Image (cartoon, rainbow, N blue to C red; front, side):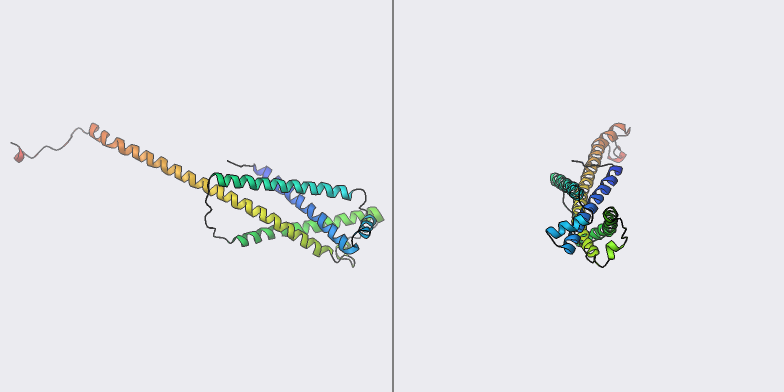
Length: 229
C-alpha cells in the first residue's frame, strides 16, 4: 500500500488545515470571551446582538464547525490507512533516539506560535468590522486590551494552545507511522538487493569451474620423468 501526494497539493492541504484550525479557534475563543464578559442565556444573546452578530454569526459558526468536523474525519481516516499499511507490512519500529514528549512539545510550539497571532489578528479584525457596522465607530486595539476585554488574550491563548496540542498529536502520530512504513520499505529493499547479489554470485560460482575446465588448454601437469615406468 503506497500513499503519495504531490508537493503542491501537500502545501495547499497544510494551509487549508491551518485556516480551519484558526477559524475554529476564533469561534471558540470569541464565544468564551463573550460568555465570560456577559454571562449566559439572555445576556449573552443581547451582547452578541448589540455588537452586530445577528444575521450571520450562527451560519458562519455552522460552516466552520462543519469544516472542522470534516478535517477531523479526514485525519482519522488518514491515521486508519497509515495504521493499516504499517500493520500489513509487519513493520517494526526502531528505538527512537529522540524523546517522544520532546517531539510533541516541539510540534505544539511550532503550531501555537503561528496559530495564536493569527487568531488574535482575526479577532481584532472581526470586532472592529462589527463595531463599525453596528455603531459606526472603530475601537482599534481596544478590543484586545481595553478595560472591558481582560479575558480576550488569555482566552485566545488557552483555546489556541489546546487546539495546537491536538493538532500536534495528530501530526506526530502521522509522522511516526509514516517513518515506520518508510523504514520497513527500506529494509525490504535491502533484503531484495542482498538476495539478488547472493543469487548472482551463486550463478557465477556454478559456472566458473566448468568454464575453467573447458577453456584451459593444459588440463593438468604430467607426472615427473622419474616416476614414469
